[in-house]
Image (cartoon, rainbow, N blue to C red; front, side, top):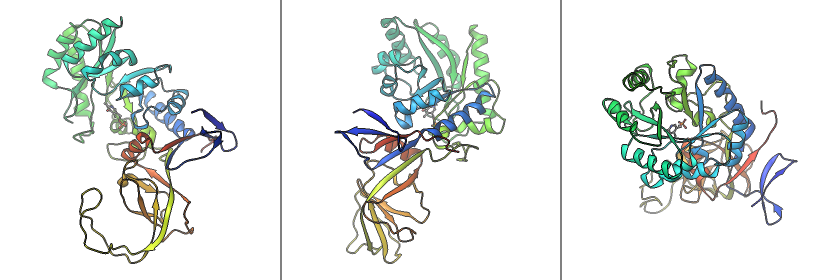
Length: 380
Ligand SMILES: *Cc1c(COP(=O)(O)O)cnc(C)c1O
């Protein structure tokens, strides 16, 4: 399908069978707002000599978005899926494989990324063999678990792991990294990041190496840049959520001077009727096997929107019209309360939502949700 820019509305539409038609549900991406966020966060980090690798997984490394962020000054992108990196292989930037690679994908990792994050010697050995096959040297960062209990070698194992890594051909250890606030919700601070710095100095001294990268986390580390507590030795962050949704993720606070609505979900009303709020009959299980609970709010105007849990996360939807709330959702139907809406909604009307990280991830991944990219000028 060809992409075409509609000059009048500044929207990129997918051209289908000769005529332009917008389809729903869709995510509309305001690239001007997004690039504004990129520039704001890049400036904030670069001032502290921190490189930003922009994490593209939440929008599946969609090409129009990646092109826009590169234009805005991003030099490095990171994704957890090698398939996403493959799709943007030809774009001029450093590519990082974020998720610890599977042994079964090492050839693709070496082929499509410049650097991967690792924690297992068996896999690093395979990466070395794949790199040899492909006549390359593959750069790696060793991940250290500082307490969040997702990926990474434990602190006492760092030195002996490095000792083994430096013996592996075609692999080049360029740094240490850590990931926090993902599984355990552990907040990055001077104590845990300080430990990472100590380890870096220890490795450099023990093996006479220079480690050029100390990767100090994701959007949950940004608050330390904002409040000037980030140790100066941390020289890389991998940032997704803060750029995409304008929020740091340690405390969920807005990042100053960033947009929180660069991504909007839109859905179409397929039914709107006044109905009671209490179902009638004997209540068993809902579509997902839960026993539902209802509060009686009397007769309400209920609209069904043609989008469902296959495409969204109900809990992550925030109707832009503050007079709208959500009742619930099954696989393909979202029910909203439109009673207090000032505008008289009718069948065919479009309802707009802000979305959280999980909801955006679902919507961008769903093939049932169309994606449109705005090029609005002067969003401010
Ligand atoms: C997803 C991910 C990130 C980015 O996280 P955000 O919260 O979106 O900034 C960074 N590092 C790793 C290892 C990740 O898996």
